[in-house]
Length: 396
Image 1 (spheres, rainbow, N blue to C red):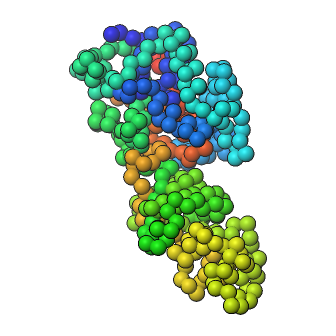
Image 2: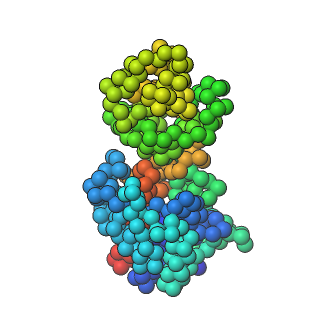
Image 3: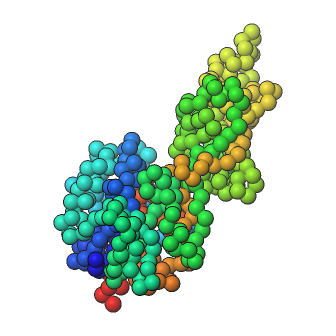
């Protein structure tokens, strides 16, 4: 088979690259190892597809940490507003939620994906599923294990959009690193993940599965207010994911990380101290904490897990309850991954320095971001950039 461009990976980055190239009239084929395209994209849409975020662009870019500089060009070209315009062009209107996150009006991923695949089909883009990429043969042809056996495909250019290593059952298993052996790769690490905590048996039995709402979290110079969930092994949830990168790094460097919980984030220390100073009388400590400070259930349980009995009525302690995190949850459970193909392996056009005409995009590149639309937008943006760059390469 002969194409102008082959794209390996039918996730958001690969499909966006295919759209860009298809619109320029190129012969494009997309190959994916799974039985159907964009499985992780569809999974992300369960509970509401968070396409992007509406915050000012500089703040948006800052969410990518030390990778902001290398992603800036792609995100300026195809950033949050372009994502919304693109969705609208597919007949999917979006709205901004109270948190600033952007969702389709129906919250669903499937209608958007169906419209997208129809567009790609109309552009002549061919999609091959159950084709697992095996790298190149000695002539430079792409090798695939297909249902009919091994096949070889040649193309003038190629875009690798092979994903990270989280949710392997959906196709992102990281096995592509074997084919790129010899290129600079950063080890995969969990991102946007939960963490293990050594709960007491009583706390685990009583509160596993309980949500913790309206709590303050502090680690290093980062503070936020949000929600998370107690699990049998530790904690997970949006507020935890927002801090997962520094927490993970601290555990790697020091063997643990101490997250501080403010159980009354809307109260000043002085207000809490005044409430707790009221006479306890004949009430139990649990009743006193509930009556005077509204601390009960899982919040009171967290206080008892992290503080000695003498500190349970100390306001400053209740606004900085230590929670010792022992390890991040396994890579396969993470929402996304850090690590992958390092940016010194590609040039400013996302082309492999060692393989001219081969481009990389999406989560297989070594960057990470919190949840909130940032992950998906950067996948769209790097796919768009790689598609444009491949088109320029073909014209040259």
